[in-house]
Image 1: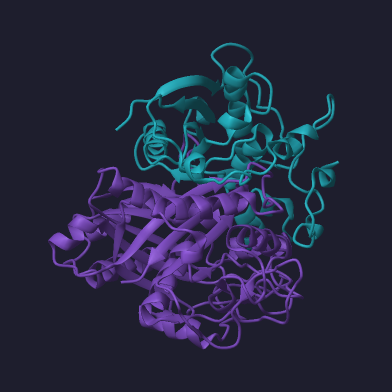
Image 2: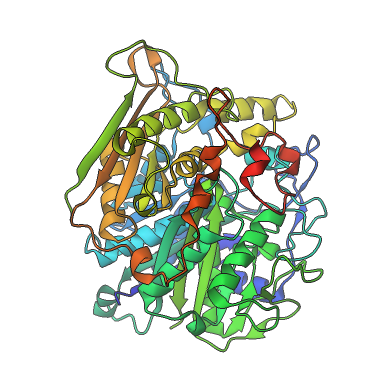
Length: 375
Length: 227
């Protein structure tokens, strides 16, 4: 199997700055949702999100994350490195106006160009705007670029900072939790809450990592992206596309489901989405609240970071594997018969395997699955 | 790196015929973005497959790559203005807030179950889209890809534009889905025509839920909910 090395990590979220803050935060299992003071929420039904008080502009945070991931990976910096970027768009796009020919004056490509110039990147060959699987698609494509010989090394960066427009849309669409908590796979779950996250990951061929002396890095063993082909915005009720993604990723890794010791779930706390995901997990790993593979849903702690969510959760999954600990899931009130999965609650569990899967889904029936092995 | 074979193509505005707006897509409001995607995708896929849905074996391994620099600028600007004015938001804008939504609409009508990727181009849009399609094919993630490029503005007199190409690679590697799924691992393909099947002749095409209050609360999803 053509593995891909994961050699550098960086992340910020409401849990704090840096990988250590992410790990300690998710292992503590305390949710970080507070009243939003970044913009006016008086007209909203829900007024909570997981935000980092000193978060800077998105471009600054992305530049910092890319730089820190490269340094964490033992590189001198990001100069000369290509980046795959996952964002909703340019933060100013909707208010920047149009050119005379009707084109928007600011797009995500302008953000990519700014990062390229600031950091001396080799360029940004892709900017992903695929909603909540944006970063999953980017990681899978990065792995494909490496294993097909297009690139030896690439940084995947993703960012979403809670802002007024997406907050208003989720509020209007009744997507936000009304009781102040994300409760993945639990009885009484009412929806998601948004959260800040900016993360970056260095991916490279095992040979390239070895050539510069990186010893025994974490590895991306398998990856997959699938579509439900079922509905514009609703998941397939039995999680068919997600199950296919997990099986494809495991197949690429040459692993049976039994080799997986942990799943970091999409787990948004949305009634329909969680039930579909639980069906997918049960289909692949077997059902049973006690007997199934241990499942964490860390959005319950750090919120849903939309386009950045997969990358933050990948960072957390790698860190947890390295630490031999599995994060608990916050907000769990009780087992929902519609979600027959073994949800980790209360305290971090000890890992019994060095292999985990992180799964995600999005509008459009899009799914991604990433299989990770710790160093 | 594989060469691509173009199986079908559609453009808006079409080279011949009246320069009329693309057909409205039920459930999508205000903006031309989603109707443009739906229109060129529909005509491109129909040119290759004929009737909906695509044959299950082909649909299962067809990716969608949606490329747009503008994105749905009209909707985004409307949302921003609504927020800035302190007005209440129409809930349907939530369902069209990301390009994945209309990609999923196309996928559901045609039974396409490959990867769904939306990109903002950093170079020539179609070149970026075809490069992404080639990557997915080389990676074994799909056997064909519907590449859609759509822009709001930028054309003559600020006109919008859209192009769809259905591409494949005759020498693409076996998809991981075919290689790895166990017997019985693929759900009944007939269920994937549900969304399309709700369009009775002369009736509005189906769209996202028109009762968004119930969207997150439904626990069972069938084609019935759109009737």
